[in-house]
Image 1 (cartoon, rainbow, N blue to C red):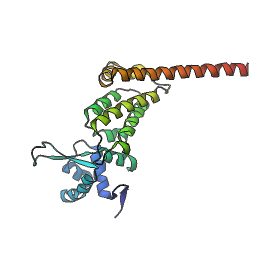
Image 2 (tube, rainbow, N blue to C red):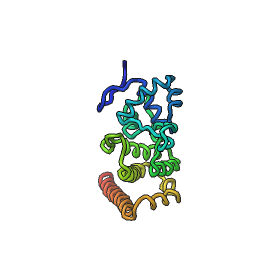
Image 3 (cartoon, rainbow, N blue to C red):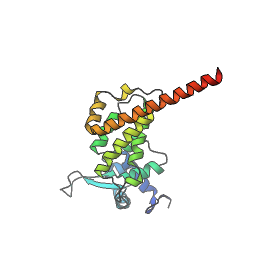
Image 4 (spheres, rainbow, N blue to C red):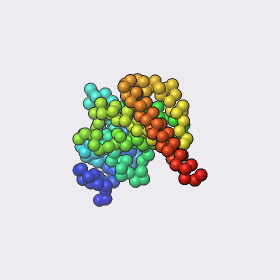
Length: 224
């Protein structure tokens, strides 16, 4: 039987790989949607999905946790998303992988990024977020990330992404920092963190200006 290797636990079957891919890209995936996606029966799916839960790739979620017989849905863990993002063939896009996100802070940030009209800049910001969240170093043994760590990762992803896209000649600050973004920024970041970000941007501005000035003077001295 062919499969793809999980470096921590061993081999996943092709069916388990299909199930994980479906769950990673589908909100509130359930037995019905998984059966429809894979073409397999419920009994076969139950047998294949249990190891994925045990490995920490998928979480089982009841629509009403207090009632054992309520509908069972499946959500990908960050470990599962990371595994899919690294090995999926054909690859899954960042948008597909982040579609199943349920954390309110991350969902709010994704809504901010969706406002960026320049697609290349939006993709940079999204990729930075995915790289931060799907880093195995921040994911615990059960495949999840602590809430306080997720807040820190979103802030770092925003700052790192911003410092990247401002180098793009098509960057438009007004396209990103509209009223909605500014309200989110003020609510999500502390005053000290915002001041630190402003300081970083000003330092870049000063460094770029002084570098351009030195190069300009030397070019003039050399060629004229």
